[in-house]
Length: 332
Ligand SMILES: NC(=O)c1ccc[n+]([C@@H]2O[C@H](COP(=O)([O-])OP(=O)(O)OC[C@H]3O[C@@H](n4cnc5c(N)ncnc54)[C@H](OP(=O)(O)O)[C@@H]3O)[C@@H](O)[C@H]2O)c1
Image 1 (cartoon, helix red, strand yellow):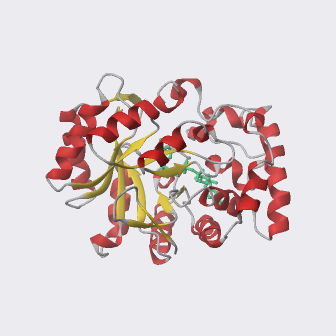
Image 2 (cartoon, rainbow, N blue to C red; image 1 turned 30 degrees about the vertical axis):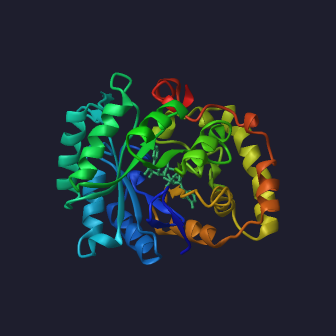
């Protein structure tokens, strides 16, 4: 698999990384443990070393799942990215964000145990804690870099002011943020600042949680407990409009001899050498689309045609519900 440089570092990563969130229940409905581990193994065999997790994905479950998948493998064969800072109650409910320096060290200590490792390749606050200056949160992670527990620092869903302030404390390697044909808000302000500072972009939601996969239908019911129940883009009225946009993409995909999911992933990959997209495959069949997409070399002209297929304003509904949008520094 082709590799790309991580930020200003000497680290090279495969062009796509595997997001493991959906492999724990509580986000996209039930997950299949055996299939999840088989998917991680298939991804690693195909050269995908980057595995993205979070300590709050089913309250530690996701990290333990990744640890199980990595049993018997060499530690250096995986590049593990971990998000922290989101707090949960025993029912899995969201109770707040904690970016205090003492909390950073506490979260990290438990993550190292659950992942059965003595270092994390990339550590990042999942959301900005509005009550703690970003300098303090990044300063605490930087201390952990000095101590050898963390190798690289990332940010997630923050805006340009926070990016600049954090980068002044310690070099930031990537910004993890939603980016897809349906979510293009970063193109105006955030992406230019990342490029100015030499920070990679680590997009997630490349398939808009499945809506952009070409396999989502009007008839597909979102089961209770699936995060997508609250998605404005899947609400009645919005869903029909959004699926019409997917049909425009399907036409181009068919002309290119690929499917919609493959084209949507290839479009993100085609946005620049500084882009390291995460794919949210949780089944081996879904992974196959992503592996195929990583081999598609879209020309600049093709990328342009797809970029202008529909105006981003035509997408109906925000990327998160009102409550979750309010937590995003990147949207302020
Ligand atoms: N920093 C953040 O705030 C943040 C937020 C969210 C996610 N993330 C990270 O980013 C990773 C990827 O994000 P994501 O999972 O939300 O995005 P995604 O890739 O847009 O969506 C994943 C969902 O799309 C469906 N899917 C995936 N591949 C498919 C294919 N080839 N064909 C049809 N359907 C397919 C699956 O749903 P079904 O199996 O239900 O069909 C899957 O659960 C996560 O695992 C996590 O590590 C970060």
